[in-house]
Image 1 (tube, helix red, strand yellow):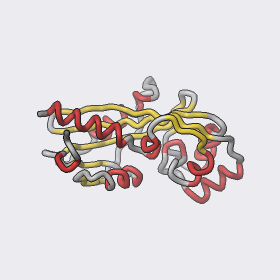
Image 2 (tube, rainbow, N blue to C red):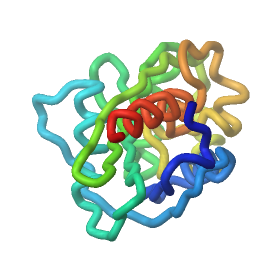
Image 3 (cartoon, rainbow, N blue to C red):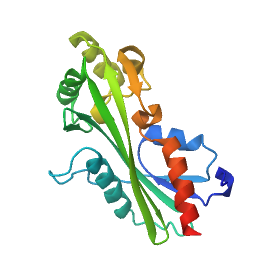
Image 4 (cartoon, rainbow, N blue to C red):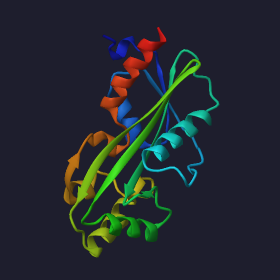
Length: 196
């Protein structure tokens, strides 16, 4: 069985501080670099297809050298009633998103693309999240104090909103943070075994 020290090095191409934190605590040999990529997607794609497409798109926009290492790119989206809620552009959009999520459930999809040599694998993980009803004052307090403009759906489950407003999570908690580490570990082992 492969353990982290036996894996080839990993290049995580991501600007997400949550992903960086998760990878720094795994025991992998990880190099982290920024990656700016356009996050638009074709209108016909739905839910998991969007997350997988964006992860794939990010991986194919990476132009650095990753020879001998595994390149990992990911994208997390929030889907509420089949509408994709990505990162908000301003306070108004953040308020609109959180108002939609208040008192309801939504799904969080993270797409992951791994590239190693000439091979690649794309997969996704999905988690259901339930919010209690939130008042306008609570939503405005959260936006004002936690500035969730770099987060899909305008919230972080690991901060105040997650502590006080999430009533139930069905699936991987870390997927909602931004990366499904348990699923990734299983997929990576299989991916590398297939390469041998």
